[in-house]
Each structure stands twice: as structure tokens, then as C-alpha cells.
Image (cartoon, rainbow, N blue to C red; front, side, top):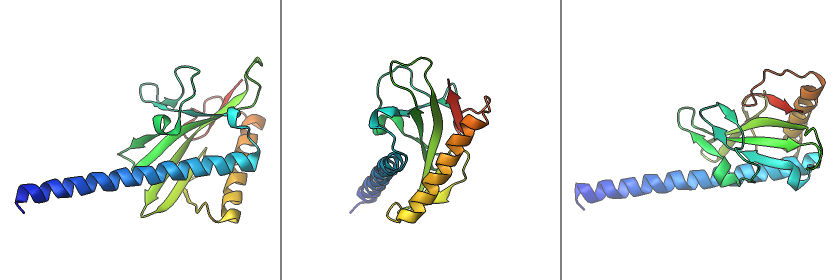
Length: 166
């Protein structure tokens, strides 16, 4: 095998490892959101995924269209983490004013171990197969959500806290 062929094989292997890692994280985020929604009883049409808008430094959709997980999630190379905006809509679609809460959800992956951060919580390693661990984390998010409405801070940008929409 020539050096060129060896280099091509290494590049192909590295690309496959990155692709596999991205797939694992997408699967983890989908499972996390499903379990969190189930824990809180959030109807499926009341949870909206939002992409990161770099120019505005905020998670938000440019239109009312629904965005899937692969389209909404982004990878931040600098911090070696994936991020996605999560909007929980608390009113029916024909209600005015709309009430919702938005936050960033961030995931780090290291050798099949996942750490997650939502709202103002710090990163926490979580195994979605350990029910008590999931429920403790989901409850801490729920408490933050509740507090966001009870003690609103309008200056929260929604990346590292909860942004209230009313």
C-alpha cells in the first residue's frame, strides 16, 4: 500500500468515525427529548425544535415550519458539543398571546458517554437507561421552567437559560 493509499484509508476511517458519532448523538437527543416529553406530559405538537441562528446568537426558527432534529441540531467544533433549541409551547395554536418557553439543549459525547445541559444547569453525565437518574434530571429542568415563569428574567437569551415568550 502506498503512502497515498494509506492516507486515503485513514481519512475514510476518520470520516466514518465522525459520522457514527453524529448518529449516536442524534439518537441520544431524540431519546432524551422523548423521555423528557413523556415525563412532563408534553403533547408532541407542543414541542418545537429550533436551529441556532449564528448572526443573532439565538435559537429560533425563521418561519413557523416544523424543523426535524437533523436540520435543527448543530455541532460547535470549538466546544466539541452539539446544540439544539427546544421550545415548549404552552398555549393552543389559535391562542393569543402565545405562551412558550425556549432553551438551548447541549450535548457532549465522550466514548459513548453523554453529558447534557439544558437551561441554566451545568453539564451532567446522564445514562438514559437509568430511570431514577433521568427523572432527577427531568425534575430539575421542570423546576427551572416553573421558576422562569414565577421569577421572569427578560434578559435571558435562551441559550443558557430559559427565554419566556408571552
